[in-house]
Image 1 (cartoon, rainbow, N blue to C red):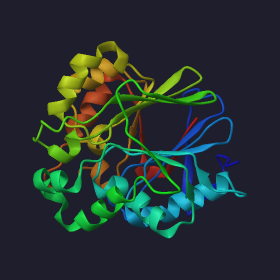
Image 2 (cartoon, rainbow, N blue to C red):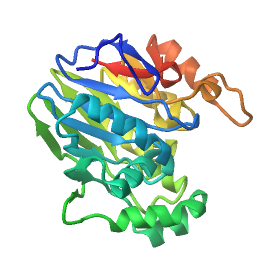
Image 3 (cartoon, rainbow, N blue to C red):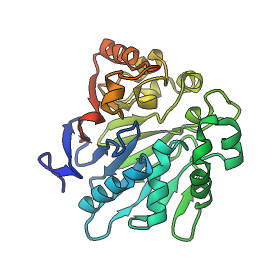
Image 4 (cartoon, rainbow, N blue to C red):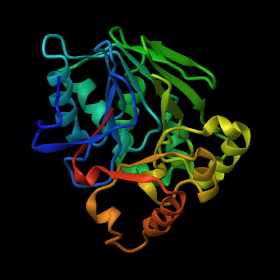
Length: 284
């Protein structure tokens, strides 16, 4: 049990109450100081799940947290992957290599390496790690699950629904738009995980999903800048926004960022903002 007074690997816990009734989603800052997305979820029955994970260096923080939650047998029941950028899959790549945590199943829709390399021009230096991870599924010890829209994975009072899967015919913003979108539900409350979904596929997804997008909390697309449009968030109509963003991104301290525009959108919606720059966000 981790309380609000605890810290993990030196990071304080910031409590966010949305009414998950015994389940907690821990949104992690990155040990690298770079933007990343990693979420460790502990269900009311004690089982642990991960969505994405962050960079390779962030594997340490995930291991520490899972061991705190499950000291006797540190096991991830299901690891859900949104897409193949290293600030989302670097940690699972490292954890699979090190073998210090048991991972029972992985849900992913990663593209074959040759397709990823052809259309995602940002990943050249990461192709070896991407390829190794892609070919590590399935293995003798890890079940590989190919997500389909409408799939629901239920674990007691906790459920993960696949809301959107990649469309390889969309080559604009290819890597980000390959994001699988998951919705986590517990005790009637929901969190929408958008990965790095861009506006091109965000618009199509929004039109298809309509009011089914409404959720109590949303994990901001592409760390809160350069993702889906304002109209998308208006449909989601969340009460809380989770920003997987370090301080330099939240404060718009580098050129080429557009996070201030997104912050204005969420302010206009009256949303409560929570940012991983402040520590580990414990959404309960």
